[in-house]
Amino acid sequence: MNIGEVAERSGLPPKTIRYYEDIGLVRPQRSENGYRAFRETDLHKLAFLGRARALGFSIEDCRTLLGLYEDESRESAQVKAVAEEHLKAIDDKIAQLQSMRETLSHLVKSCHGDHRPDCPILSDLAGGSRSKPL
Amino acid sequence: MNIGEVAERSGLPPKTIRYYEDIGLVRPQRSENGYRAFRETDLHKLAFLGRARALGFSIEDCRTLLGLYEDESRESAQVKAVAEEHLKAIDDKIAQLQSMRETLSHLVKSCHGDHRPDCPILSDLAGGSRSKPL
DNA sequence: TCTTGAGCTTCCAGTCACTGGAAGCCCTAT
DNA sequence: ATAGGGCTTCCAGTGACTGGAAGCTCAAGA
Image (cartoon, rainbow over all chains, first blue to last red; front, side):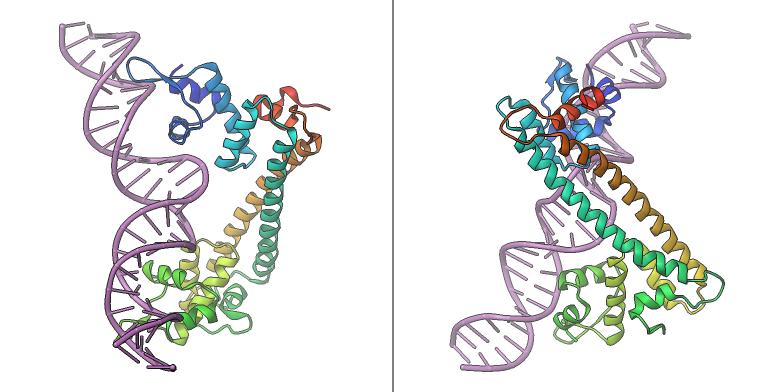
């Protein structure tokens, strides 16, 4: 299989697949013409990576997960630990965004949004009650 | 004011302040010894930037907001438009993270996390929906 | 057979918003 | 005179790609 077919079947762009080879996540063989020659197992790995990335795992987490996947003596606790840590990071990120969202939506609601220059959004950014320009 | 004091009073690291000068967000004067000499207005701008960044606005949004802040003929609608667009981006991001969270938390719950190798998390990553219990 | 065009290759640079570190100048205190 | 801390610049690295240029390979059509 050439990279184009693998890209189509895995859903990953060719550039990304080459990048994954660069950083050692996949090691496709080479044809005599220099083209990458992917086997089914390579495709399988790339699809695995695509799904892990879609769940937000970092590349290093993906490397770990792939290693565990290929390690028949793994313990599921190892996998679960990686996933739980990532889940916590997601929760933290959601909380942070929701806090921003809260503040920002209040500000947006309080701005009349017309032709006049007065704007509580800018007043807030400028330092709370003070609303004079520099 | 030297950069150290500005850093302390604005809450931004000196490195970040220098970076903001590099990209033209602030233009402090210079003392004879080559040190940056910040005025109160520079500090005010930096505090503005710190708050805008804390709400998740991009640097380019910050530049726009700062421009509007200094433009006495601005219309609040312009500010509101920037804020609303950012709010929408935050909402999209939250939705994406919550979707990941949903999938991931199901997977984590379904994994025993013990010494055995069998793991529904890896099964899911390896084959999409094929090996999902329930 | 020649040409075209698609697909493949490598390498370099850019993204975003910093952050770390090195080398070296400036200022104050001891 | 020296030690320290603060300041300066410049270079490189982060994460995970992405775009683009220059050039090789291959299959098909005129």
